[in-house]
Length: 405
Ligand SMILES: Cc1ncc(COP(=O)(O)O)c(C=O)c1O
Image (cartoon, rainbow, N blue to C red):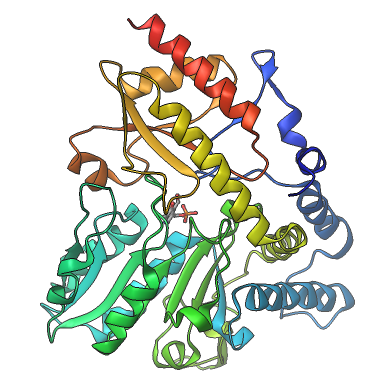
């Protein structure tokens, strides 16, 4: 489908040895590695045009501003937003969701409701808990069924006259489940409730078209789509963002300031207080171009094959509980436990084979606790992973299980 050797060569870290062994990196849901073009872009930015953006009228500042704004347009095109005014740079998905929660706070009254799902990352729970503590809002949860998928049979019943927002994860970072967000968005809109999609685990695996989806907000992090860490995006429909107040104040987000008051800048700058991570934004533009050159559809197809291959192999090992009833409708993250062996022990031992996986609750503690566990072992795949790496992971896992018998 694509030249895997060439792709692997693009990622210098994949050549690193871990305890003298080849690195097998299966922790891509936590963060992804960077292709050379992204690393070069970061060096290029600091070597050739580093300067504060939107402020100077000198040459370097103008170049740096252009690069930053071009990156915004690259993001806009990638997710098919109507306008670059709808693309707000943040430091990551967490900040993007916090921005919405904080701005929405002024529209919310005590007992107003926000609907989330049973699969949310803490980044899409805790900001609402803060609002719950500060404003008395209530959270309602879309439950999960025994297939580790959202149970939408009761979804409509969760809405009341007090429902103000639905905020759901597109793909679960713990389970790899791809949630039916199209349906969720349609249902919410039929009740005139806006929807935020947490795309932290989908932007790197699937084509996202915000106009087709018709979501009101979409949040993601650059570091999970092969860009630098510390840059992220909040997409918001212009009509929504116009209504919202800024979440932080400071330089660059103003039109006019007196000692007594501030007039805010127009979108998108209204939401970008202080010096933005312009190098991060530049790296994000380069990362998206890199992904587009390979083709996000190609990436999705290949990653689905990797997931299915790993799922089939893992299912054949005795004593494994996989937190996925089937391999359908899933991508990248595969969570499991081995009966009688602590998840942390599996992770610690696999590390000695050069295999990087994650153990614990993956910032989805309520979800993991809901299936009676304190943690899981999670392998998560990216398009630079190979079937041979999965074979090695499975063989190493079998050895680890033997050691604990
Ligand atoms: C589904 C999901 N949402 C939100 C986040 C938060 O992303 P960040 O820590 O980059 O802000 C993550 C990170 O793992 C995630 O997986």
